[in-house]
Each structure stands twice: as C-alpha cells, then as structure tokens.
Amino acid sequence: MNINRKKHILIVEDDSSTKALYTSILSENYRLSSVSTVEDAKEIIENEPFDLVIVDIGLPRELNGIDLIVYIRQNNQPRRLSILTITAHASHQTRLDSIAAGSDEFLSKPVHPNDLIAAVEHQLEST
Image (cartoon, rainbow, N blue to C red):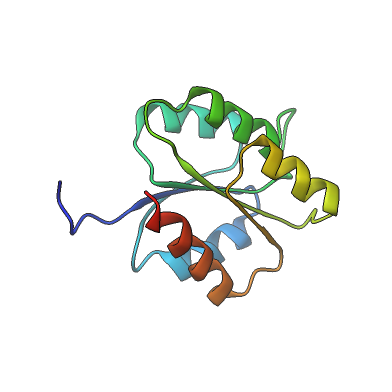
C-alpha cells in the first residue's frame, strides 16, 4: 500500500457553489470526485474506490441523500465506506434519520471550513 496516496473523497452535492467551496477547502490534501445526483453517486461508487463520501440530503430527482446512505450501507462490501452528511435541512429529525441510515457524522450548512476539515480528518482516521 502506498502511504503517500491521497485519500479519495466523493462529494455528492447538487449546488455548484457549495461543491466549489468544498473543492477549494479539500483539494490540496485529497483526491476529489463529485456528482450531483444519487443515481450518479451509485454508479461512481460501484466503479471507483473511495475513502469517504460527503452527502447532501437535499438532492434533485426522486432519491435523496438518506436514500444514498442506505444504499451505501447495504451495498458497499467488503470494506466500510465513511459517510459525512452535510445539509441545510438540519432539523433534529433529519439528523436522526441520517444517523439511523448509517451516516458517521452530520454537519449543518453553512459549514465553516475548519469544521469541514476537522470532520473529514476525523472520518479518514478510521479508514
């Protein structure tokens, strides 16, 4: 295993400015890929190895971020993929639903860059 390999993060976010913000914060230290829908996320997860997925709850089309978390937990074998949920829909119930579905950590938008970095580092320590 190459210890100098950059950890690979998938960003699942439909808002282009938010995606650009996460990219500007994380791109120096991590390899990033991004998609805007659950359908695209499922496809890329099946074809590429990731260390962490950052998931927005409010995604376009019929499936949302909770649906993606459930899919990852049911289908990502043999290794466990870390999931960080970040959403503007930060009700107590949304947090509970996210954690119950299998999210490892939950942040509310707007996210401070230091909080994002700390959450990503925390999740990647366990991979």
